[in-house]
Image (cartoon, rainbow, N blue to C red; front, side, top):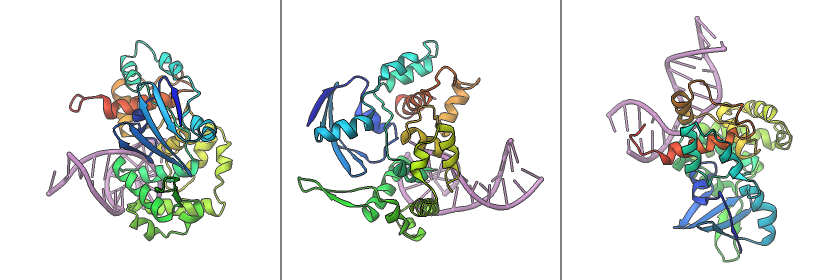
Length: 274
DNA sequence: AGGCAGGACTACA
DNA sequence: TGTAGTCCTGCC
């Protein structure tokens, strides 16, 4: 068990920011996170955060995963004080972190995310995990399922995937799994590319457009310049940034700003006040 | 009860 | 290069 004090870290906000679909609220202040074969329980009271895992996993996996060694005050202070909207958004979501999630998992997760709502996305992913993922038993006897490997998912037919409730996205996931499994798509190659190149390479995958590619770049490749524009962000840009989002000013942290805006739109604005 | 949810594809012009 | 029509499902 690791217990540390953290600024600008709020596990509830990270979960609510919609970048991770395998995080769950076990009870009032206990969150469970599954990433690859790793599993952790996170409890937070104020700035004190407990990670229920080994020292080694914390140092070498969860610190990079949660981006704990980055200074998010730097991002918040970079916000233009005359931009009252972004100030409010950043203040509201000041505990958000940009996670470093697995590239393969993000590819499949955000293929499923299109034209879909978060609750169903979670269900779809749990379905493919329990169907095709590796079962893992914790020391205390509880079990969970890892994210299915490319080979395991490639073994599923499009119909099998539809049975997991993916709908028309089944054919996207099916083809992506086949392409990755047989080496037609080399994820480790994409991992080493620049943002621009990685975005282009991802968009060559059937079912991956600009928005999904940017989500993958931001949440898996930690390309903080990626700025996924979905319908919510589109509305904000039209409403608050008619002259365009100040990309120059936020170079190198546009994705962080996107997350503040996204989370603010989802949770910070009383419904009917738009 | 019908539109829409964290889009992208295809088919057209 | 730009824009309609289409696609699964379920929630409001």
